[in-house]
Length: 621
Image (cartoon, rainbow, N blue to C red; front, top):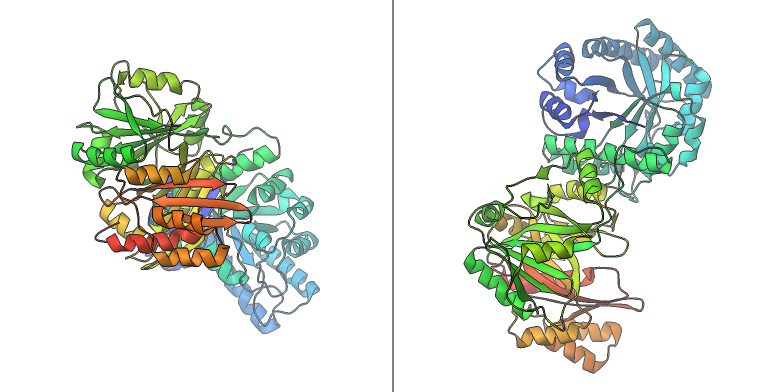
């Protein structure tokens, strides 16, 4: 199965001509023209139609037309006259399809025969003009709010010019079973509109107007819905119709690309549910984080080295030909790149000492690359020296790289690339593996990167959280593999003075703000780190007094936690212990966690951490 991709111009920001160029560049075959976009455009409908043909984008539909069926006679005549004029505009645009929304007017009558008569007359008028009408049930429609009712009307009016429009939001927001789609005849389904959304408890109109998002970014069971449509034999347009305030503040080109990627993801998901051939390999199931690469000048490298040593890392190898050092313990590899040229050097010049790349261990490099290509995720290539391993990479958050390391040959890679031994690896590591990586970005970017990870990797999304920063709210959402081998948390804020926003301002873009390492004994790790002089984040005494009241912890345990600045959370019998370092160069900080059956991220402690970091807020922690 192959989706014919379209997008409504209301989904992205900018002038209509700019929207159409972004839509064409993103690879869509068609676009719905939203009436308000046309009304505000300086170009005529005829000029817009010509522009679309020049760009190779088909005008899939003109929309919306509101309040026609079931009106009293005086309003009915006016509505039909309005529709007749729309047919003239459609002719100039080069489309034969118009969207008719179910009536929301307080004057609309709950008279089914009247609705059937109106739709039949509308069909006659449309046919006389060589046009078609797609009828859609709005979730807040006055008398028709369910696609089963709109289909019953379309079916019973039985006019060749009257068909159905299915919109994922209107059906799934009302939790209408997708199995009901099986009754729809594919030749009567004129177009499918696609939208995801978070599950919210609010009125349908505001939910629709402000919180729609791309497939893969929300909570709707869109794959099952799309599969039900495909089972009918439908082979027409799949068109995004997204209303979202965040998208209106974002780049039209980025939103258009995200939308096209989301439709490819939905196509893949539906094909797999139907056990049909998919256009791409399955989502990548990483075996974990193979390495984290830091770009750093020699002075910054010394700053990182002090923190790494205090956390129990040892410099176990030097690169065969480059100024790159590998630090390791347990399953963790940290690479510090101080090369005077190349991407890492450029990254350091822009951002300062920071994470420039993350390497994921994957079972099938080529399949991973093929999926990335199908999703239009750009690759990165740079010159490879003689005898160096060529590890494929993708563009990631903030211009960083996401390397795809072959899981079967990683041991050989390390031995070959870093043959110059420096020190032996710690015999008794304090830390075992990378627990999670926290990436901070503009609030408007979060949905884009959420889609990136969800489309490429075999990860699930956690619910979005609101975390109280002393200077405003921070929004956080995680993506994680089922076994916890890989966890990314995405963080953003609209408050300009929050820690997240100040990081972006000082860092000149999105990036990794902190890294959490897993420990089997957080108390032993914290004690060893403190003895080694690790600059730790100080937690005030009031926090521990509250813990005592909340959980009735053993006094000796609580005293140890307070002495070592260890924070705590509990979920049933599951426990979570964590402590934080101060930031290196006021940029990247580290966390150590011990999970005792606990699956979350200690979000309840985030305000405590943020307040503690606020003491060092000039300019960052």
